[in-house]
Length: 302
Length: 293
Image 1: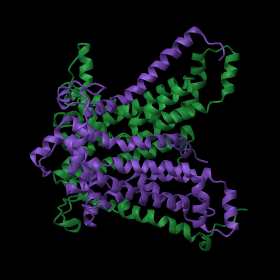
Image 2: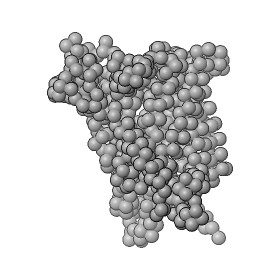
Image 3: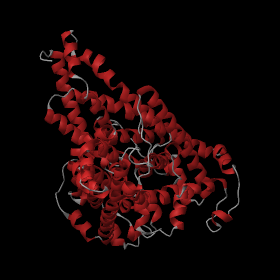
Image 4: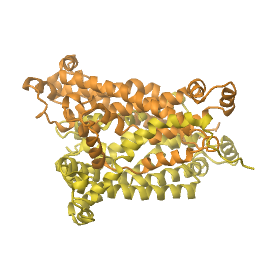
């Protein structure tokens, strides 16, 4: 029989005290802004305050749907984010599979050390480096391409190349780090399976096809479903450090738009509405993602 | 696996080479700016530098030590990182310890867990957070930077799972029988046993604080208070010197490519220094932290 759970404050009061600092900070700085989403239903003016600003109902959301600018921004966000999700899934898996074949331990560790590094550098640093590196006026990449008679390519200023640049540099930064989880799954494969396959005459390629790949399918499903929630997260840090007015047409995303329209342009209410739209879509997709991960891979985060 | 076919050996050779090149590709940009920073200004402006300095000299590195703006933001960045990491880790360790208990021994845990999950999946957004921070009178202070991003639920879960899997229940019970309370148990049983995990999350937090730049742009109006990352953003990306109150001579120094490269490299340096320690643990950390009992 299960004993009834008691508060047992005599022993456990400290546990509540331990949670107090984190809970207080979260209450103020994470929960605190939530009531502020009513800004989205007002025509907020800083000098009138939240209580004094007039209500406009769904007006800001109507603008969101009707503004061609905003529609384009949402579309850009969706395209960039989806492509990132897809390539951040495929490239790390291929990389993990290839690295798994390396039997030379020193080489394996060296490669791992090198590819994880960019993940820890900020987009300010990498943005500064990339602007230099991809510059049309003698950037290293265009110089190398020039040797083969290609270019120069205006990676940062051409609408057609900007998305490409964003996605490739994002994959470059994070593919190593994203591969960790797959490498872990690969190292957990039972070696007896390979022995058995060898007995049956399977070559290395067949072993990969029938043992290695099936072994990482569950974790792939988990990663794929959980990344659903990011479908409107195109990566503010990256875009904000790489973009410029020349590429707003195809490179502007919801977060950068909210910053410009809201904090720089003073359209607080409209920007809040756009941000709220993003949060709500994200929330719904995260919940769907968790549900799918649980259903198809029996994964629970808690 | 003892009989390797010729085809497989060829594959291995190609594969090893490819992966090594891929690894080098991840370092090339960093090596490039390092080479530029050590190069002669004229050679750098003419874009002659590849991965090795041309006309080796230390001018750029000497110049950045003479720039007040740079040194001040470097100091701001260090202060922000140290203070932020201590406060955040303190809160997180205490919270993770409590959350690592089972509901049956700690009634209320489930409530707290949901409390934190909610902020992981939903937030008020940029503008409401700005309005709040401004209303609290925290604009232009270091606290706006530290507190608005203090609670990282993902790291909290990692720590909690470490505590759950890394500390044998028997040890904890033994400590309690000896009369220890939760505080003593945390300090003398949990922390020593989870040192690698605590180190990992601390380094993650440190790197996060150091790299954080956007909060500086929104919450700080006085550029003298900018931490290094925010300063580098204005310097490199915005290329907006108009409101920096610098005399033209100093402006000239900033815009030199070699100097800029040296500053970027300093921005990356703390991460490069802690990286070897970080790498030792984070792989294990992520894999263990994501495992649920």
